[in-house]
Image (cartoon, rainbow, N blue to C red; front, side, top):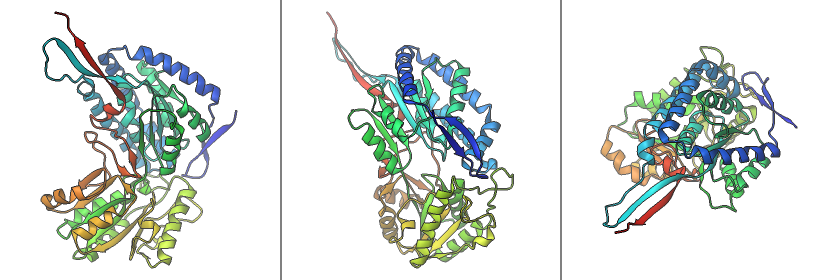
Length: 462
């Protein structure tokens, strides 16, 4: 049995070393989950809710330890890691609150002599494949609804953040969740494909790269099961001439660099009306220079390392290629002494004189870099926003709600924001178009994703 190692981006040390689960472990887990789910589905919803509420409370009580674990595993400043536990609670509490209404049967108008309704049944055993960048916030979106609906869950978390799945398992055990309902597997790609292809897996939810999404789709290709895919993003912002520049710049800088830009819905490209372009860029650069790049374990740090050196190398290459093609970086890396080639530590970059022939404006960067382009009209901005193979979120910055409402249907994306960005509202559907994937998480509609419909049509005896 071989081991995997989680290398901390903080200092390059081995933070976690654990054995991989084997094919035998996968088989045992499938048997256990399948059998346990048959019992779990008969547990009344109110009792399921009590257990899940207890689980939420237990997990949140470990916020301080969890915050440090997040920082050491993936590099986010410890001063910011606690927000993830807060966000987990916000989403979990909301999904718990709407469970009754979201799972209740639908009954059409009464028809004499008949009983008719549409019931929601659990899928069965669901596989959740979660990423490292927001390890709790991405997994909670489906985890809570899946369990409340009566499913069993097998979680394969990123090997960069394996302690997240183990935190879940410990809290569920303490909360009294029956054995076999929540399961953890630390496995590689080959074994993951075996798991997903198994007939006992009744639904899959994956968050990750486009390449990973195609691999998941291929693995389940011989089955007709739900397969939710939340994949890449290249999220744009459009700053109109009437925007409030103070709040717009502040929010877009944060949306570009929070979590070192490692967010599927982070801001990666900005289109600014020519009337305010110069003022916007000046303010944006000045605010970017206020960041302190350094060890995420130091209290004063607000920009940590990227998850690994390979990720920072990818972003550096995009920046270099753009500059060679005529772009200009407005940030001198010497302003950020911790930024060094050959390490995960990378200064934030602001690129101007960019265009859509450059990878930095077309391909996902997933790092602390943003390109800013000048536009002359709403029409030009919308065309550029849509010139992407991705479509997760887009934001419009304006004082005119009517204009934003008129532009929204023209933008090819899953969410349109006005005067905010890089945020998930648990009451709204989280979804995307194009290579961003398919399916829905969060909102009442996530319960449709983790259940199947069954129609009841009874003819009553006279």
